[in-house]
Image (tube, rainbow, N blue to C red):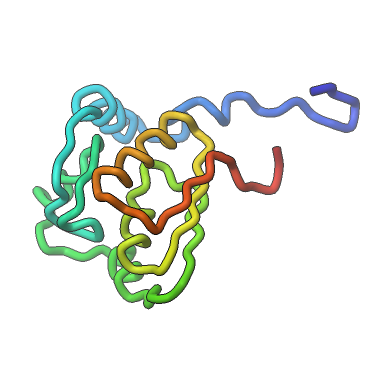
Length: 143
């Protein structure tokens, strides 16, 4: 890329992982990535109840607030997605993608990050999901 006076250099710090997280969130992310990244388990609560997932700490919230539905959970559960195609932009590990796939006719998801893309496809394969198209590209207002 060639920079001109009119074009500012990109802010390289924005791509550093967890830079914007609090210390508590960075600690939880570290624990998740280093201690539970290879664990595969069946989700026992929330939107993905009964589905398989690799990595993450999805089982932790149930320890602290069993049976409580967050406002976000209520929102997703209240959507009628039957017969629709859902676009999941920034699919991360595919948690919402899995939920959308169980509710909608089809899902098209975008995840450019290599590690996240790999985990997304692993989670889809663990659940034998067939109605999802995964695109390894980013979607945004700039490049």
